[in-house]
Length: 504
Image 1 (cartoon, one colour):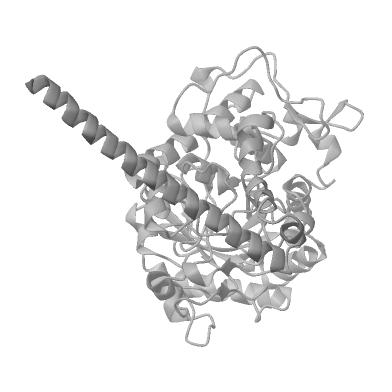
Image 2: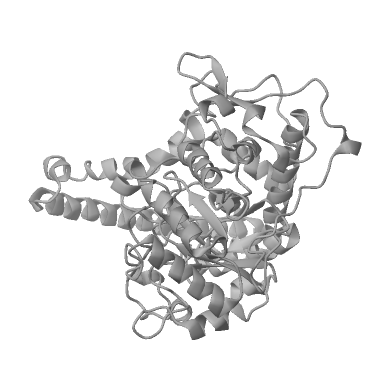
């Protein structure tokens, strides 16, 4: 009898639950139908979108499919070597290097080695033995400065501003740079405490808005320069003339990213869009540029160089001629050469796609101009622009670079999935967003290790290439150590495609 009552009570309880669920389902269904009716009415009567007006409700799916299409292509449809700006093979190598797991592949290369532009390194019959290999040579930048800089690595973290990057991302990069003994460029967004937190070497970039070193009128301040230079971690100053994503246009930081902290660091109003001028207003000539370099070097006592994307090259001839008129000590201590295919920041497509030269053309041009003017040893060459894998970096060393910077490579090491949300506040990996919920997934202590591992494994694999070519360390690579594939499918040595000047 008791069991029957228990069963009856359970049935009554279960029936009540089912009735509640059924009512809830009907309620939600009603809400859904009501939403469809409202959307139908709105779509049918709006005048801005043709598809939605002609196909109410259903037309909305177009925008959903358009948004998620790039993710489906990335994970399901595109081949390993098909995507842009970085394909799956490139990203996968960075992920494996950052996680310090096996980087070998099996059953042959998937790289299209016959594709025009492909670079093939020339192995020799007697590769460098491990016992004969040397540590990478160290180069001093700004030897005549009161505080010259002797970097610890040829591979470093390129300019990415705090504000464009989140606090956890900057912390992870700073700590990772310390572990890897490489430098970290602040970008044009000023110096934050998070850059200094990891105690790594820091390069301070001065953009056209002079963030962090400006007075109340937005002009460069010697007092602010000296204040920044007083930090022992600050090793060099870099004047940014242009950057890869948008040559000819200043930096862009949406107002929703200008938090009180960012405003305080950049010395700008809170909550307002921060748009930098498209150039330094006070620099109108080679003479003005050298004056600016001298001013910063005198105010800080530290090396000062310039960064740009190369387009027209005649101005470099004028600059180097002016250097010799003033004396070789007036030259910039380094040149950071960016590429037209740079792009961590937001930029108009017209500039990102179609303005400036790629690094493949501009790097040999710059190096040859320095050789022509006998300035190659005085001015150090740093290059950046999609150089995230060992072969890219080894190519740059062959062409004459002293140092290579990477931004997106280190972003990938932090966990970037190439979601293409950098210009919004919705980065799913917490790298380029100030949404605390999204930042929570990026743990600086963990990601710092990945940053260092990516650096160390890349350097190791560049050394493998160098040793295969028969040199004892990467900086001994030259143009004759590689060939480039031509449109007809054959290859030609780099020193024939890009010959050194006769006097070199």
